[in-house]
Figure 1 (tube, rainbow, N blue to C red):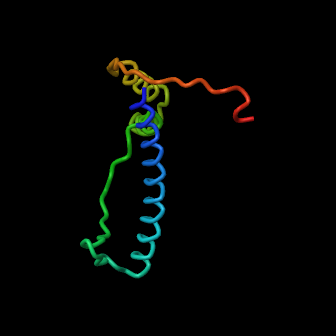
Figure 2: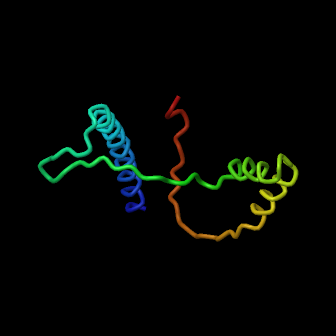
Length: 109
């Protein structure tokens, strides 16, 4: 239980640092783009502006939109295919232990 509490604390700190890092990256990226800079030398190496293409995730909304387009506007067939894929996805059961700490009534009031 003590280890789980420590993990929770560390995860909260990690989340804060990731948020702060994202804000700083966005600021630096805007500065680099507005000044047409691809590389900034720093004491530990260099900050390099990279771009990469990523694909959109295959959500049900995405699939429905494109299946409908594929089936020439036939939303019924598109929806049937989305439902078929959703119904036939494999599910995996994972087991875990989690500490539940009951909230004290009135603590957040």
